[in-house]
Image 1 (tube, rainbow, N blue to C red):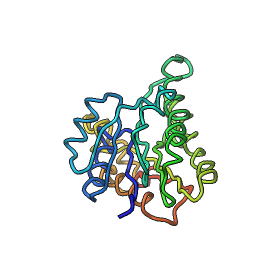
Image 2: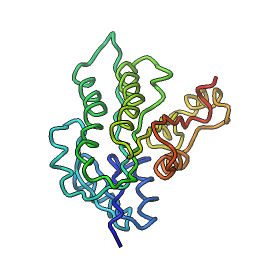
Image 3: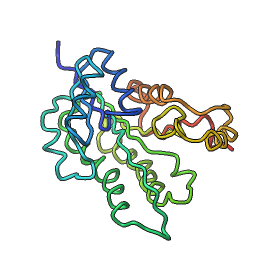
Image 4: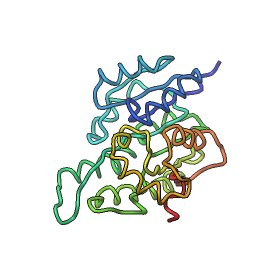
Length: 234
């Protein structure tokens, strides 16, 4: 059987990325997950099981990405789920933190794609992770809002440049059972629930399902998909 290519999940050692990796590994294909630490990445790969292996990649060090991904063969699916949370207001601007986040998403994301482009199979698909701070800023979201706006438009040029490879983005709202949110005080989350027509927060399974939809549906290209239960409507 011809090599159909692997699924590469950058930021696949925890949270939504790891949950997605488990689903893809259970399909039986080869899965490559990355994190910043090699030992942690390989430990996560072992726990996920199947044909999963781990690599160390730091998107904020884009000059190293090519070498770090040198062992990756043909690629069918690429998901870049690696994010960092940055509380950075313009009144108290932390240049170093801003530079790291901007580099991670607006240089690291496309450098991963640049590195793997020669290895994409003809019907490959890419999904990038943004976030809804681009639509609903909050105090301290100066950098986050800016870089997620960049992801919003990045997929459009990539879809044109990489055709017929498909490129889409998912923008989750507050994911109630994710590691970043499941320990928050109930009153904090309730304020969001009260503004969500769904009447609850979205789940990691629902975000994973949205990524699988974007990866698998051959007619979806250049789309920014919001997974927020309708939060932006109110």
